Length: 164
Image (cartoon, rainbow, N blue to C red; front, side, top):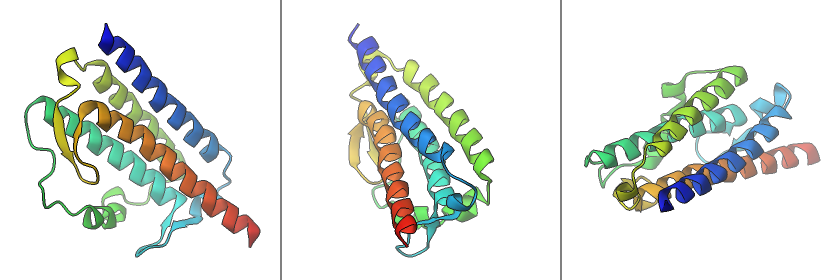
């Protein structure tokens, strides 16, 4: 019974974070999708940030699957900065519409995976590239937090753009 409550709580966190992000993205015009958001090293636009969220949610869902199978997620020496730097090459140049579709499809698969978690699996751990060793439960919390953090980055970039 505890798992049902945990699943419900995590689904609510994921839904709230995603709804906030989707509402923000729905308010953007086409030009705003090209607003620079992060400029450390390579410049990332709103499009790039959303592609990053899609790719990373898919990756974290794969991690959860590997953890459940007793497999390694990422090696200890994994370079997250290098991985993120290769984003544009891996994701190509999707349109905002394609990204929104990919976001919805990825979230549906994430929720399918979450629904299949057994009571005995919540505390299984795997290496996350940024957070180190975390539980399956923490992976799902990280997915929600990732949406929230980058939605805040996008809001901040748009506020700066509007002031200029």
